[in-house]
Every structure is written in C-alpha cells, then in structure tokens.
Length: 284
Image 1 (cartoon, rainbow, N blue to C red):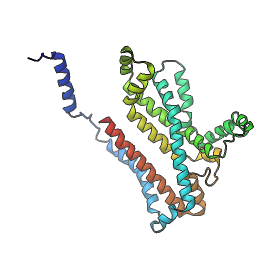
Image 2 (spheres, rainbow, N blue to C red):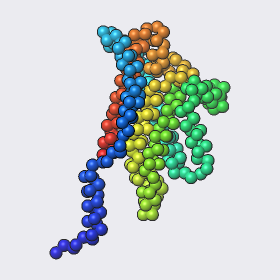
Image 3 (tube, rainbow, N blue to C red):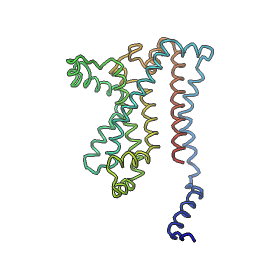
Image 4 (cartoon, helix red, strand yellow):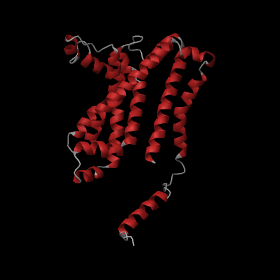
C-alpha cells in the first residue's frame, strides 16, 4: 500500500491548480476612462497615418533602396544593435544595484544615470563632445595614443548608448522591484552564492522586464538624432544614420524623407510587436 501523502502537499497542489484555473478578476473601469484613452491613441495614430498618406507608393521601393538609403539603414541597425548590447552589459548591473541597494546615495546615483531621459539630445551630444572630443577630458588622452572617437562610427554607438541606456535601466529596475528579493534570500539560505543566485534566480525571473528594456533601448537608439548629429556629425557611410538621412532629405527630396521615415516606423513596430509577443508568452 503506497504511503499516504501529507495533507499539506495535497492542499498545496490543489491550491495551485485552483489559482491556475481561476480566471483573472479585473478591476472596475470608470465609464469615462475610454474617452481620454481613445483621444490618447488618436494623438499618436493620426500623425502616423497622415505621414503614410503622403508616401508616393509608385516610387516607394526605388526611394528606400537607393544606395544612400540602404547604407543609412544598415548603419542604423548595426549601431543600434551594438549600442543595445553595450547598454545591457553596463545597464543591467546598474538596475540590479538600484533595485537592491539600500544606500542613501542610491537615489543620487539613479538621478545621474537617468539624466539623459530629460536632457535635450543636443545637450547630450555636447556633453559627449566635451568628454570624448579631441580636446575633451577623455578624448585628449585617447588622441595622444592615436585613438579618435568623435565623428566616427564609434561616436554614433556611444551617443546611442548614452541616450538609450536609461530606458533599459528604468525598465529592468521596475521589474526587479515588483518581483522583490524573496527568492534570492531563499537561494542564499540554501547555500547558493551571489553569482549563482544572480544568474539562476534573479535573471530568469525578470526576463520579461529585460526583454522590454532591450526593446525600448533598441528603439530609442534606432531613432536617435540630436546627440548623434552633435557628437558624430553626418558623414555618409560613417555616421549618417537613417534619422540623419531623413533630416537631410527633408530639405532636398521630401518624398524620400517621408519614405525613409515610414521605414523607421515599420522597423520600430516590428521590433515592439515581436517583443510584446515574446514578453506575453514568457508571462504566461
């Protein structure tokens, strides 16, 4: 005769099955709330649709496949990917420290790191130029050793990382605060070291937040304009990303500018849509 299982185990499994099968209860929504919600959606959708209406579809393919357009698009995708990778390597540890640290200086550090969120991009570009330009604090030292950053492709990546990393940090920090550190403390009591806990407990639990942060970071880097123009310039094939190409064509060929702008919109929608599907799947 098999051993009887403790009632606590049976009750625990029953409660978990009940939680999984029970439909989520949604809170009541005020009757007036859809009105500003719809207006907010229209505020975003109408300008985009108006731009789509101005696209010259007969010459759209020729406009977006010109050598200059393809070069700018490839440069944008490459630098935005590199900037997102750097932002993750540097920003994820920052988010963990901000969420877990109890030091009184954490708020000051957070304000400094998130400063690019509120800085005008041109100001950010000037700050980067003051730091990494030929006469900058770091740039002068690098220039003496034969390394030049300003007005190179590396400058584009640095500018994109500077303005986009705060989006990743704030997104991951929010996910960490929502999840709490209860499981990390349990893992520590079971003998797991800090590194193992970080890799096997903390990271998997905030994976949807990490995904959302990476998407926001990539989208922001892809659309970066002001800091890039100020710090990296607009050299075709070197620093002229797609937003800079759109700005240049706006004065020369408005049809090309609108077509390239639509390409940026489509890429952003695809990235955000794919990330939303993955995040929802991870949450389920």
